[in-house]
Image (cartoon, rainbow, N blue to C red; front, side):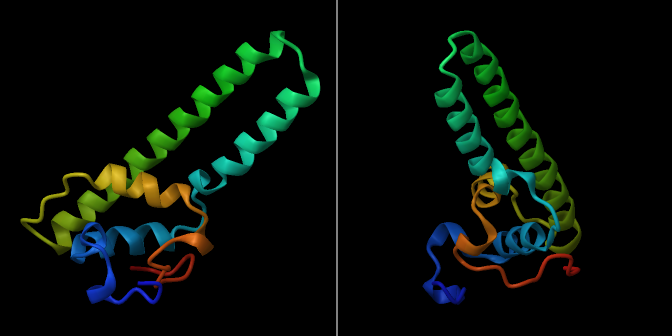
Length: 124
């Protein structure tokens, strides 16, 4: 599974549409969702250091903004993948693609399973 061989992948990772989605997402130079964990961790440290009750509502709004950013970016990428799928794989259902892309985009590039087959900036 770590080598990305089709027979070893779980059912949710198999198929040409999922491979297209993985390749599209892995070829993007900048995916902001990858760095959400670092941002939230920094926000948590700031919240613990300041210990101000007034900052908690501000932090909550910032966290909602981060979640909205991840959802918007995932919807954008899912829309692009569904367009590619209509061109390259006609008749394929793209149901569940937004959630799949969001889950993959949140993970750091080096920790994604199956690992990326394409490099950053490569055309797919």
